[in-house]
Image (cartoon, rainbow, N blue to C red; front, side, top):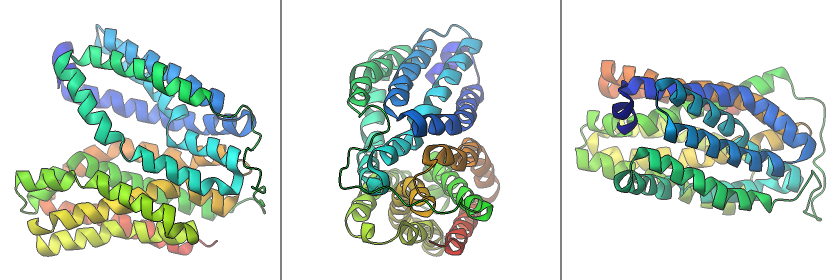
Length: 349
């Protein structure tokens, strides 16, 4: 890892800095959501671009591990106020109950993030170095993302004239909130575990290195295809229906992998990717459909705080399981997926 080599650190410390950033983002998320509820998302999202740029610049000039951790701490703040949850809260404030379509559209575009981001990062790293790559991404935040966020409507006034306010009933029960928070945490855990260890898992199932890499490349297209399906056919149904279907996809994929081994690598990647693609949308649409728009941003921040913490721990936990159990580590994520599906079945409209 270039950063670790340059600073004379073990890669564990670099990943630890990233984990710290995830924890900070979980702490900041509820505040950012409440702020968006009150004043709209334009200013918060624009601030996130400035914060991301500042954190990336700190990384770029980091002479010591202490400055490296400081840079990641600033990036964690940017993550807490500028990732999916903040975007979803902004859309809910603009479109009210009609936000499901825009939320799906945002995640559809974001499905290509890794397709563009990884090659671009690799190109900057190979051409200039990791410090210059950080500067490059900081400039992208300032030159591309900041002006785009500046085009958002000011304040909290909705721009969809045909949209009627969401009818907010009694406050949601603690049981319903706890179930949904568990679903988000469980599905984020599985998603991050697979993102970190998918090639190793598929190879443990008997797939060749080439097959494992090729199967992993299908995750992105599967996510995008599933989001297109959500944007078209599944949007006719309540978000609970599509979320239940999506949560069950990973356990079914796990059964296929254990039953058929390496040849099922492609099926596993397609099923897992499709389920993950729809669940990303559900993280924005389910709280809106179940609990209404009042306090949506703050509620979304609290619901996703446990998910951020588990997301940070997932690579370490699943990596240890994979090293100890091999292919049978998949039963850990399959069991988590089954529990998430069961929680969604308990939830009612």
